[in-house]
Length: 313
Image (cartoon, rainbow, N blue to C red; front, top):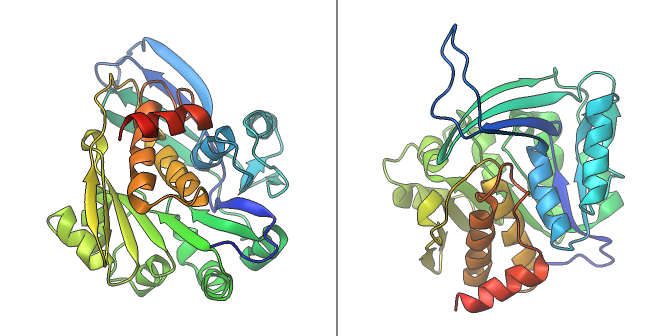
C-alpha cells in the first residue's frame, strides 16, 4: 500500500472548500415561512472535508488537507482549527474569491436539514503536483464533488491512481450522480474502497436494495462499504461480505459521522488491520461522533479507540 519514499500517511483531496458549519440542535422541527424556532444548543465548527482530516489528526495520523479557504475571518478560523487537531496546512489554498462555503445545519436527532452556500468554483488544483509533493500512502476523495467529473480533474486523477502505489478511498454524497454516466463510472473505478450510505447506493446504482446496489458497484471497484446508520455498516468485496452492528447510544447530531467513519477506516488500513476490523473500528468511531454536535467534538482518540475495538471482540 505504501509508495517508496512516502512522506505522508493520508492526503485528503478536498475539491470543495472547507465548509463552516452553523449547527442548531435540540429542535422539534425546522422553521416554516414567517415562523421562528429557538434551538436548545448551537455550535460553530469547521465541517465538510475538515471532518475527515480532523478525525485522522486526532488519531495521530500524519495527514494533510488539500482544500480552499477564504482570506478573511472564516479562513483564519479554519487554519487555527486544522492546526489544533494536528492536520498539515501546507496544501491549503487561500483565495479572495472561491474559498467561502458554509452550511446551516438543523439537527433533528437521527435526521438533518441543510441550508448551504458555496462560492463559484475557482481554478482547479493540480492533482498530479499535490501527489508528487506529498506522496501519500492513502488518498481520500470525500464528498463526490461534481468537480471530480470534469476532465481537467478526472483525467489527472486517473493518471495518478494508475501510476502510483497507494490506496484510493472515495466517499459518495447526496448528489444525482449515476453509474449510467461514464464519468461517474470512471471515478468509481479509481477506488480501492468505495463508500456510500444506503440512499446514495440506491441513487448511484438505480437498484431497489443496497445489497443489489453493492453488487453492481463491484463491477467497477474492488470493495464497497455501505453505511447503514444506526444499524451499523456493511463490507462487500468479490471474496467476502459482512455486517457490523452499531452500539446503541443517544443520538445528538449525525453531522459528519459518515466522514469520521471513512477517516477511521483509513486509520485501520494504516495499522495493517483486516477489512473486518477496519469496519468495526469505523462503526465505533462513527457512533462516538453522533454523541455530540458536529463531526469531531466527541470522537475517541487513538488509544481509546483501539481499546474499544478490543472490548468489542
